Length: 115
Image (tube, rainbow, N blue to C red; front, side):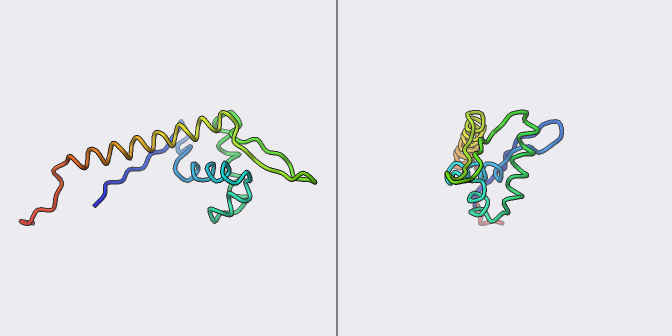
């Protein structure tokens, strides 16, 4: 048995950033492309770009720097602010998971043969 927890960021309007958005930004970081990132996650380019734009609008700063295609090719990368946001969230996620594992390992939640 495992205990799992979900963590996300909210603002006054509600949900802002969580595991799904973090996965999208990690994929952009890995692939250098919104299109390739979206494809690797089984989502459309339009859906991925919409999520990123909506997040940037609500945050009030850019999280991606994009370069239009052409003969040199396009691409996307996280801005310094985007890197801080993603890395901070991932660290929070790791610390939370580690704390849950530590606390659960010490807990008295065990199967009892008496039912």
